[in-house]
Length: 563
View 1 (tube, one colour):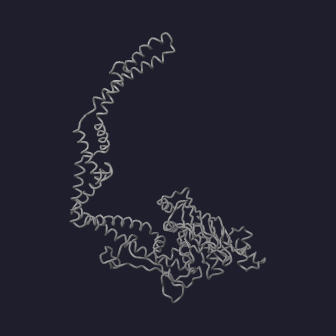
View 2 (cartoon, rainbow, N blue to C red):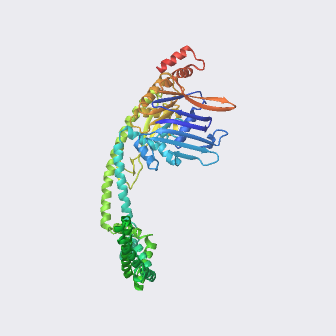
View 3 (spheres, rainbow, N blue to C red):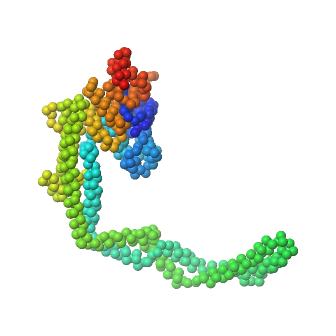
């Protein structure tokens, strides 16, 4: 749900902030008041093209910011995949257009590419009118609408899962069928590398231990001399520290009997003497371990040279080298599977092809059956919307594939991730005209009414939570306008609907009614939007019904419409 939008220095909007509500939100106002500018701002939020011409005269930047509340798990997962956190479903999208700097895009204060925003925007709001962000203008979305209508998404997902597994199997076989000479060369290389690493017998941390041992051997002379000097001072000469500490200990031992206050000092004296004895023993033990071994030093240097050579080839440390060994071991095992494994993969691929072909044909048949029913339902809805002579249909095109494994209608057909065939909606607004692609011949108002018809039919199944209808009332009035309003009202029970309208019959059905108007002050034009209370709604609908001159009759009629 779109909760709020803030617009600054965008076209003739100087500073605008407005909150929206669930249900049917209607925007009215005189022609040129700025209703389309608000739609342009929404289009920008969905990843539409940013144009510096939209920056208000005299300003250097324009900002559009929208706050939305989301509960669709797929949309939230899509955002999470970008590394962006969403708390309690709250999403804030911000676009900044600049004359002097780069344009910037944010989602919850995280930088975002326009391409990524556009992908998310497709799942947030559907705008229908004279704008680029219209799903019906993109034939690739038509299959989604048809599958929603025919309740075929489970079948399609089952096919897609099998198709993905099939593609992976094909890729595995292709890798194994790489040029035989190259494969053998690769095996020879891997065998050599594995042999070299295994022969080295590496263990993690070995190089650090060797470096420590090397350092000790290099400084054996200094270690031995320094330890001996310490022992001389500590215990091995007349007047040594140990001898003196023994005398201190003996002097203090009898004193606590005279003065108990010296008990602690006597104990410390004894401890110091014992600690000195232990230190001397430990130094003698260590001195016995000091080794003068040039041969061992040479051996260590040779081993370190071997390890460093392997590091230069296979990784920066021993752990990386061993990890590489595991990787190439698996690769060598795969390469060594040979013809037997390739035959098994070929058999698996053939089995998967048969399963996929059956699923694809079943799905295609169900789609064509659903298309016939959808055609009738859409035409019925459009007749209710004052498009009495309209024809609606679908074109199924199945791309030939002589090497393909799926046969449909006696022809080999290309199989893709969604099944077989491409689907496009066809449309003919007038009698005697042949059906043509909807995206190419329908006007903005016609597109809006076709989408309104589809949304009325698919109300419970469409995942996009917010819909905007611009020009849905083009060329209609009276009773038809009331039917349009009823359809919008019905859809708004499950989605948040925005409708820009000039018809009082539609405005009267609004859950929330906003008036867009422009003012001129100080030679500057400003567009604003306000949410109207009941009395202002009555006046606005009266104005829409009877023009600028509002009478008691038009006011009474307006109240009846709202009622």
